[in-house]
Picture 1 (spheres, one colour):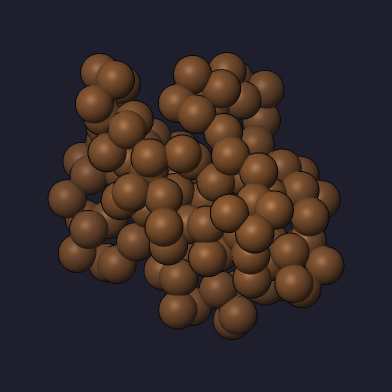
Picture 2: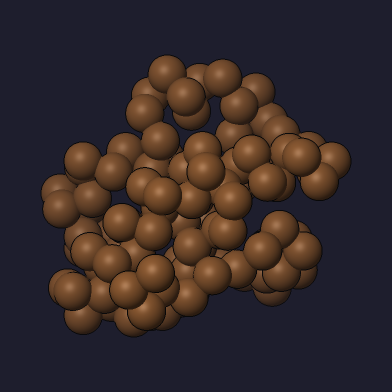
Length: 104
């Protein structure tokens, strides 16, 4: 989708061991229900206000419920010159469906 690089749950699990920034772009209510351990919460509509925090150079993986909003986050960041971004394919639903742990 629009040149967005995808990462699947297996790849994310490995990447979390090596040090990446994981950003949840879902709403406050969705984030309160469950999240992937170690993620930072920045709702999609607040990304422009947090751009400076996302320009550090380390790889960033965005996720949402299904992968659509996080793909939008990737497209927007790439338009701002941040190119080391990835979208979690299938979002948190895919992560959970594959039996991976969620934090409350």
